[in-house]
Length: 339
Ligand code: DAH
Image (cartoon, rainbow, N blue to C red; front, top):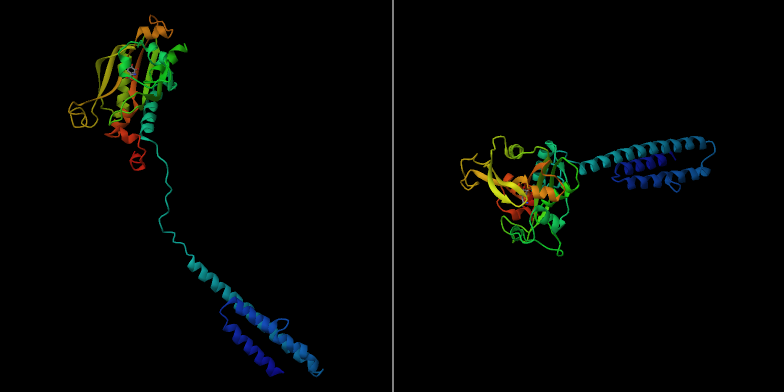
């Protein structure tokens, strides 16, 4: 009996040590220790053992069982550890690999330029207001001293919704809308989209943007206008920028001027960027025409004001040295993300 148990144990140990899978270990366990296992069979055969030998044989069987259980358990633990380590090696993460970059959106050059202009004027105490893109003929033309047969209407041909309703050609009607509110003084800028029936080319588009400016108060002079725009130009294009006012004509201002700034590329010496002149035109402006004030219910004897209009695209093109306006509208990510 003793030898039989010994052989059985050795056989079991051999099988345990040659197991290379958890399933095999389990098989060994079932085969030897299970209900129908070999060791259990020995116990069942106890009835054939002489009664005086039974306690001794029983003890031997229990010892073998305990030993096998322990060896099996150790082997199982060792194998599990080994398998886990193998798995970790397979799933190793290289923390030195460069991370994947998420693509983040980007502000449009027009938006960047607008925010810059707004920052400058808000810093001077201006309010930012808006007006409608679909506008009455009255606000877009009539109230700005551009009556029905005025030649200025030809220059600003636009898209008509009806006889008296159109897509605004300029942001100047917002001046009238603000003045009509009757709350004085006024210090506002009004950015927004405007429309003209222009063919698309490098400097024209049927839809573009302007920023209107208007100041109305007592004792406002052309000197205030000059000082304001000189400061604006410096903030936008650099401390050394100078401004030049050239006499011009707009129906709603008197006197009127166009404003040039010294070329920020060459500092005024003349280069390809400013076409050799040293100056770059940036906006139109003037003192609000007394007739315009009167039409909006403001007494020109008591109040005066100045106005100006800037092309937003023009500012963006100049600031970022873009030579074709069409690039601003093509929405090519490769172009847009440069700014
Ligand atoms: N509205 C004018 C245009 O589109 C620009 C302009 C000129 C606006 C003079 C003004 C101004 O407010 O005073 O051509």
